[in-house]
Length: 333
Image (spheres, rainbow, N blue to C red):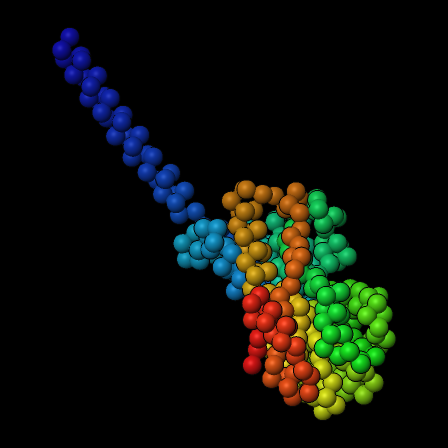
């Protein structure tokens, strides 16, 4: 009887060790599980680069760190449609766990290659208008993300405050940029409420900017630039031709003010990236699904003032605006 009890005890110990050994690889596999995220960026310029940096930070905020449990496949299409297509297909063939499109053309290219892999929109002005989602509240498919529409009404009021005598507002945008065209139409609709007559100008590429911009500044008192990636990449070209005629440029993006715009009430691009990264992390961890995750709207903008540019153009910035920008935005000197 004693021998049987001893034998049973040995068997119990043996089985316990065996199960313990088997459980270790499972734990290790769980710990070493790495998610792959493909990030497709339309081109390089400060605004889109800031979104990219914010995405990485947002993922990190939620526990996903490159080199530990996250692999980033970052592709820059350099504003080439064929690159967008090829890079999107690459993400699909490599079975990325999630894809992020920075700028509308990038998101559209990703949407063309998959209807199952989660796609997160990295700051898109009009997701529904770009036919990326069925509904901004209930996207219904594999796509959700961040809406980056600038507060146009507030921006127009700011231009009027800084230029009380201005009559004609030029709006310049890229003809192929759906987001920019959406904003241009909105400005055209709202500007008369602030007493502006609007003249619209379009370019097809940065090669047109100097010529079209030069014509525009001879015919307007101020220039409004929507969230337009092509113009953002060559903002200094536009500012250069505008400065010749002392015509101020008012963009919608903080980084474009740094490149020579006078002022904006715009959305912080890095912050938009952070929100995008956090949304992506929630999808990766299974906390949310694109189909039922509403598009994230930023409802307020930050006041950004370029005092150097204002001084160059003879525009006096009210003390109240400077105080507000120092407190809740940014003053560029």
